[in-house]
Image 1: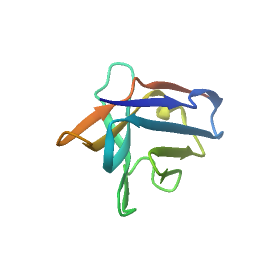
Image 2: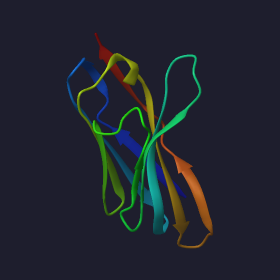
Image 3: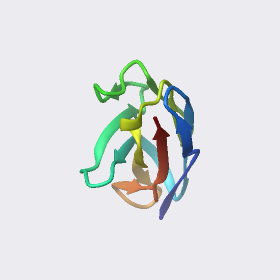
Length: 118
């Protein structure tokens, strides 16, 4: 099995910064891609940023220029700058993992709350 553990959420004022981390562990052969998603209260979960094994990144239009996704081994980071109240939500990490003894599968973390006050 594979576990994803997020950390780094919290309360910050508008204009501030936070850095989220997500560490993958368990029966991992390789990770094809990792990403961050968020869900605001009463809204659907949306993709925020993703990074593939070759380093190719993508971002939601709403965070381009403010957020930066990066990865080191089995940990993915999301540096969030110039935060806005509309960035508030639960942030989830996900990973497309090829297991040591299994095919590729998608895993999710438990989520970390980010609250941006105005």
